[in-house]
Image 1 (tube, helix red, strand yellow):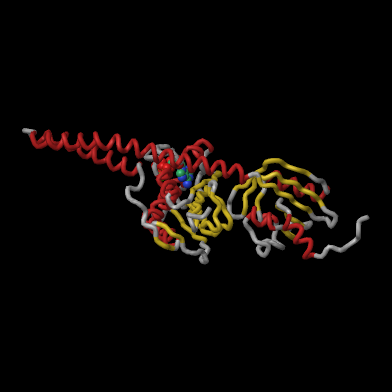
Image 2 (cartoon, helix red, strand yellow):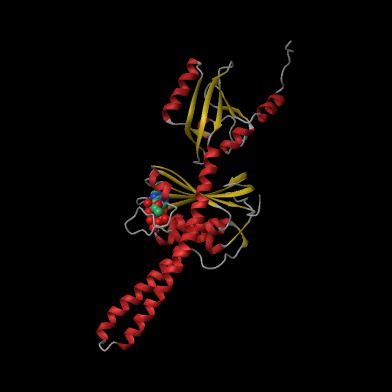
Length: 355
Ligand SMILES: Nc1ncnc2c1ncn2[C@@H]1O[C@H](COP(=O)(O)OP(=O)(O)O)[C@@H](O)[C@H]1O
Ligand SMILES: [Mg+2]
């Protein structure tokens, strides 16, 4: 026999929170009535900032699905959509199975099953190992190339000293300057030469420095806004390395946007976040966003490899170097892009030693 009992609001909250699937309750105007703990985690929002707000304040659905949601609200129909992509308020793209279930009071219950996490972990592992193997390859290559380059340069200098006609020195100078240029290129490709100098630092010191550098470089071209979480704790990092990494991302963004383009630097804390196989209690996320044309799928898959560039004057080193610098901090760079909105997310763990 089923015992009739009024479940108190508190108890129903506790039940909902115990469910691992993200659940969002909407009223007849598609405003948020409630969401459980799993939904808060999936969508990175708090109850306080969501209740009474329109659904779009939690996430954006593709246009056709928003319309379908309105229809099912009127018709009180129930449906399930597999593997749809939605965007959270922070611009993060999530892939979920979405179930829409009308409930008696007239509103709707949305159930979101995130598919993104396993996919993401696999992708992160691929990025990390890609970065590690290209680092190894470059180090080997650098060694092979720098030795003969040194010989070449030395021989050109000897030759120059013996040349009877000073006019001919023009040619030896070409050899020497080109050998030097290649040497510098190889140095840049094989990444930082020394060990990082890890010190406690505030990430905003890094992002503000980068913002100033970008603004000094192209004052009229871009508008840079920031959205910082001032309560972020300090992390251990190498100031110069982090500046270089964020500068590479920032420069790409400046190059991608047209005149009057918009860049945004944003920071926030992520609790219990994993980077590759490692789970961290606290991770700082720094986003470098631009409203440029976006990056196509093929480029997205390859752009962290050295020498991959989409620009005629590009070297294809900015992103692999940034990835390697962040990798030395136990972090990772990821990118989500669509026309008009490209977001590079840099994840930096607070304690790189965390398991
Ligand atoms: N914010 C961005 N918007 C559009 N395309 C980008 C962006 N960031 C990187 N890219 C693409 O990735 C490529 C590789 O970038 P990078 O490694 O910095 O090398 P480079 O800037 O020398 O080409 C760029 O050439 C560009 O095609
Ligand atoms: Mg670049």
